[in-house]
Image (tube, rainbow, N blue to C red; front, top):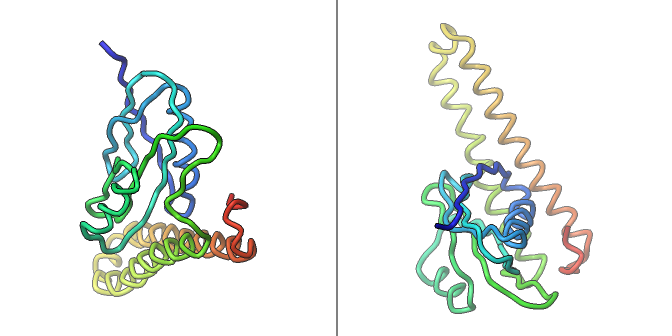
Length: 180
């Protein structure tokens, strides 16, 4: 019977390259991704032969079958489709040193980041009316305010990190191979 293991790996949407690299390293070590669960943070692996697999993470606010078909026709396999969070994890086997990419230029990466930043901004903005609507609860239970402060800080941090990544991409002047 083959060996299975499950790993929890938290990753921020402002740095999808870290989860991509982590998954690719698991494959190189012979741990083949079988399933992704738990809003994209619980990964199940099966022990096998080491492989060269490129993982790419994408964020989409709206999707349709054409989006999925486009990637599948290009040879990508969908490993995770976020039902509620908009994230997609794609993979493709390859040989040699040329890793496949789902984005062909920096502008596409910037657009992906803008989609995610917009989502985080909307989530941040709606926290304020919710907080005001729950003012009586906050008065009785001050720890609720602490929860709101932590949540808003987390959302603000994510927005700032995404914007910083986009500034770095723009400074590269469209040089896709310099992406870090």
